[in-house]
Image (cartoon, rainbow, N blue to C red):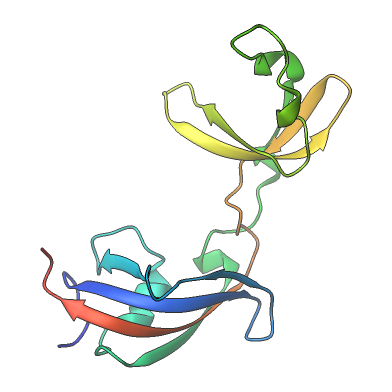
Length: 152
């Protein structure tokens, strides 16, 4: 059976930045392949194109420019917040949040939860990056289609 729109697929892959020699940033395991329905689940279109038409057991390689992946890093998505906005339930500041690299869940005005990464800690404020973690990165996937089936 070939992978086509509407089919459930499972893939194993390794994701590198910038090419086959680039840093590995993600890898599936035998126990946890990536599972999705082609054309229905939110996936990078170029990634879907790479697996479309393959049969189980076939390999793929796809390079995806940042413009076709998560876009360029947007400087407007770096936002500064006063530390006072991060009071714990006890009314005290949560000092554990005040470290570069910490992931902080925040809520938009519409109630949607978004995650930001602390990029700078200032005396009375934090700078938080709300870009996708792979924004500005060219992606290189090496993988293998392990299953094609009808959706359940």
